[in-house]
Structures are given as C-alpha cells and as structure tokens.
Length: 298
Image 1 (cartoon, rainbow, N blue to C red):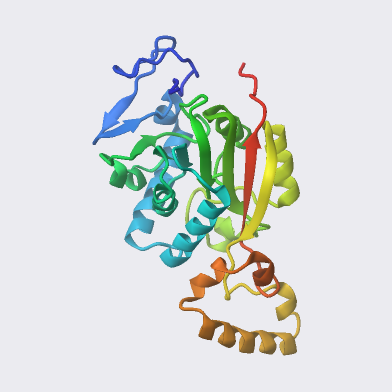
Image 2 (image 1 turned 90 degrees about the vertical axis):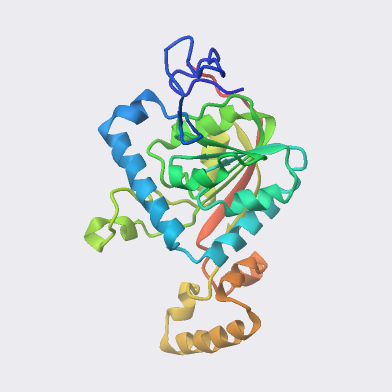
C-alpha cells in the first residue's frame, strides 16, 4: 500500500496525490513522482541534505567516485545474498547508479520500486516498464506492507535518524519479507571530517559491525538470516600485513601474483569471503534479515 509520507495515513488518493487527512500533495516533476514530506520540501536542513546528495549524484554519474566495475561486482554479490526474487515485488532503497537494480531485474521480479532522494539517479528509470521511481526520504517512506524484498545499499550510514529508517523498512515490508542492507564495516569516520579535508556538508555519520547490526535489526522486528563481509580490494590489505617492513614486502609480492590472476583488481571482491579476508580487509558488511514483527505506529 502507498501511504502519505507526511502523516502515514492510508487515505492518500493515488489519482490526485492528495492526502485526505493532512492535505499533503504529491508532486510530479519531469515524470518523476515526488513523495518528499512537507518538511523535506521546506526546512533548511532538509534542503541542504537533499542538495548535498543531488550534487554528489551528478558528479558520480559524470565520473564515479568509486570504480564502476567494483560497484557492479558488489551489486552481483548483494543480489546473490538475497536469492530468488522471481515474481516478487522488490524495493531498491537508495538506488544510486542503478547497478543493483539492473541485477535484480535479471532475476525476474514482478517489479522494482526504485527510491532515492536524488533526482539525477532516478531520472533514467522514468518510463521504465518494470521500474517505478519514487523521489522519497528513506526516513519517511510512503509504503506499508508493500514489498516482498527490500534492498538498501550505502544508505543507513547516511540517514539522520537510524530509528526512522529501520521503522520505515519494517513498515514497507510484508509479513515475512526480506531486508538486505549493506553498510560500511568498521570504517574510519575521521575521513568524513572537513578538518581532514572532506569536501561535502554530509557524509557517513556512523559505521557498523556484526553486533551493532544484530542489535539494530532485532530491535526493529527482524530475525537475522545471514551476514556477509564484502568489499574486498587488493589495495586494502589486512593491517597485520603492513605491521613490519618484511610483511609489507611479502604482501607486495602477493599483490603482484593476485593481479596476474585477476582480469581487473575490482574482481577481488567476487572471491570467497573467507579466502579474501585472509589478506584483504572487508570494507562493507551485508545483513539479510526476515521481518517477524510489525512495529507499532503512534
């Protein structure tokens, strides 16, 4: 069900786009449905937040800040962790450059709903026969009991209110629905400080590990199915391999051997995680969880 993002009412007229309770109005801009709340459209903080990620989206579409082959390989991994989505209604929350959406479409879902706060990321899906793009805030999703599967990659580290994000993920899923969420793993947040040279107003606001994800997802009405360490690259060795000059030299020789067996360095992230983790540090973690409880709306 599509609901009002502003007040969570089910009395949203889908033809007119107006909420029968709070009067919120859906906007349509360039064929794209705008489901941002009144606050998202008017507050100074929200304007800066959405503007920040729209500027990043434009830059990434012109010249991706992360190697696109790496992103495509990561999308393949997430799609494999999710499993069979044949005939499922799927939400791709935080669609980004669309690589995961493309992977999911190859697995024959009924349809994919693409959600992002960046118009530039969503614009390629306007008019797509199997993808419905929604301009919406992940903390105020306009869905209730709508999806069999919800995937979200590189979003939860950015949101202002993690509790609102998790509440909306739970609410958007049907009973027994599956959520697959990818986030940074034990990341150094100093990289996102302007004092350290970070050039954007907003960046990663938190990092994650297994215990934090288990706590968050269980509190949000989910049961953990699996966790997957991911995001391996020959350029990010395990710290112990750089602890002495001798170990560093050994890794550099190993690095050359690895590259001979890789068509591209980004393909290292497709390796078996247990093998890869022996020499490379995982940059990300993916949690797959099943919804077991509806959260109470107040």
